[in-house]
Image: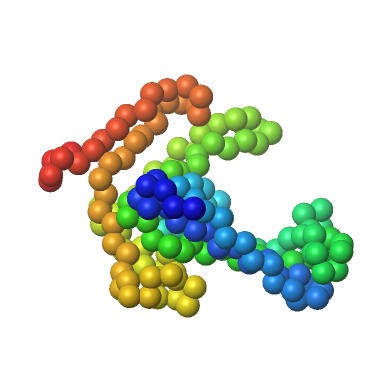
Length: 177
């Protein structure tokens, strides 16, 4: 189905899971209205500037590969049982405007519900060609040569916890913020 919202902000999250036993690949495409990115685990990223993270590190954690093992095994329709499996996620179809939200809410036994306060650096201009699988065989717009976005606005949460605080929007008007 096509809608104005999907035309403006829509992209596809493409997922592949391969059964470790029969090697069958299960594919699924999920349409999204923007991206929700998690900040990478502190052990998964080398940080050069103190605790700052780059937006591209958040993309990398989304597109990482992984394994379903133990209690988290994947149910294989061919084997008719839960099996170890490998998964892979890619992003496809370029939106006209790319919406990105950062998931900062964390929970653990020591701190309970808390906010990940690490700084995320992001470029004013983003070439997302490699991130959105532009030019790969699964990309629907073969004539599209790039995927460039210019930052238009940022919404920031100011508060000590995920449930307390205020949202502040910074928007561009021409060259002024």
